[in-house]
Length: 222
Length: 204
Image (cartoon, rainbow over all chains, first blue to last red):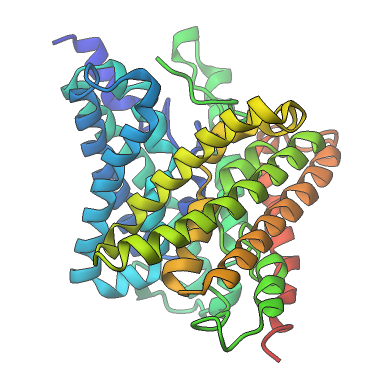
């Protein structure tokens, strides 16, 4: 077991390769499902579940899947786990499913999952790939929860469903508008903190990456 | 999500469905789907237009095939819970096929749309539009086709408008930490507010 690689994989998703603030992938659920802390957390955990298991199976099958038809194969593996999440959530937490179900269905095309399949799981051992899924999923969940806390406070004046006295609730339709603007301001704040950190960092390897400015034309294959 | 555009298709005219899909229920600005390409490919006007037309093209064709698969294969076999897997496989193989067919028969169209085609498989607007027309709203064939074309036009409208604004914001003197994605997101927020103003039109 290579310790440096293990550490890099475990911590990469949280900060250096954060899927929301640095890689800027999977922006649709980030904007649409972060209306409250609970919804954000559920969306993050659902994505993390799919990410861990799709990474594991793609990594196990990496020598079997032919290169030319890899994308359809990945999609079949990913959608299997999405259907499991969908069925379970629909059966046991129907309220949540009616709130964020549209975006649970769309986890299949979430670019974080395909990007990790393509650039990590298809060329790394199963254990590392699972760990990568855990750390990417945690990074995504933390980012969603941070946005969810801010939006829930602005829209409903509450924290995790508990009303904070003195802050009135806003019209539900108006609160949906906050998605883009809160995400934009949080990313600017992230960039601001990273720029401050980088200006102070003494050694080059201590510096952190900013949010990338452009979409890559295609996901890089490892 | 925000505006109910009528159940089962028959109650609402196809014109109203298409109008709402372009303007008041815009796929990007009020359904929040297809945001990755909306933010990522809107830096230049030419690429925004190319991406927009590629989305209309793929959305129109894939909705036809998805409708056929859902109503003639999945429903009779009672496998309708597999719709996510069936639709994404239809879309992925269709995109791959389109690439081959366009390269062979229409090099001009291929040079215009070709580079955007691989990105479209992971564009959630395509799968989202198929899901909402075929599964959630259970539209008939004509409504599904009209809805999908209109949704694609809505995407084109949103991405072209954003590209127009970004030409200005990229040159503007803004704080360094807002450069790139953050200012684009805030621009999109203001656009979404403007589009939300149309929401009342169909209700009356």
